[in-house]
Length: 289
Image (cartoon, rainbow, N blue to C red; front, side):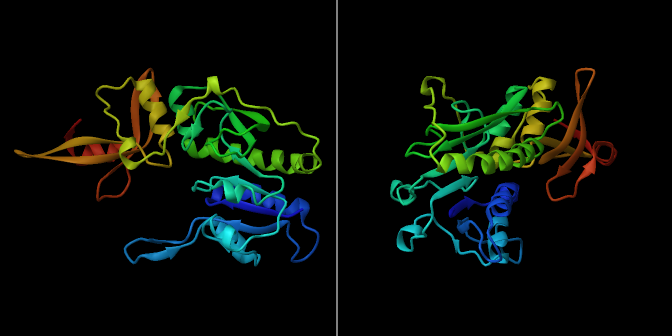
């Protein structure tokens, strides 16, 4: 079994590691023939190149690394199938067709619901109590291909997007490794999605983290704050008062909870400052929302 893995962030490493561990046949004989991941990006004031978690994983094991799926067209890799989890690039039909068994996509929602880039934040914002993941066979449309397998995962009242995402991808690792052999043997019959039930999510930007606390129901606000963690982080505007002067500033909301139906902020961060408790903030500033 030879696999090309498409992925970038650290939370997909359990899948990559589980496949490697289960199907490795000896030293230097990983089932992972190559990885395709996002290219390193300059980070911080010194613009030091930062490599993705998948990049580092493959580098440590001397596995070939590609920084674009299109590079597979120039330098094909002999592999049975591809597996994709949070990669971050549209895959062309020509690339998909390179794999005899196609590309399996691990998507963190119960498709056809919540197709697109941000299914986990959307799940928390909507107040859903059940989430999960779908393993589908990629086609030319976004999150549209036939379903190979699905599983459900409870959404906890305290879940952030990060904590729910971690559990879903950790559970996906076991599901994917168990289905690979029967899938390659043709023992799994894919199920076509009901496109009439499809809903969609979008790529989130920094601006999407804005919340007006004066106009948002406390329960909805608390869910929104959890859904925006770790990206793009919920934020609002505050007006800081100093004698007769007023200054409008961004305030990140890093933690909050409900108390008898009221929203209580726990940790905040004023732009240009470090994180502080809400008590410290209120003691240090005169403010209004």
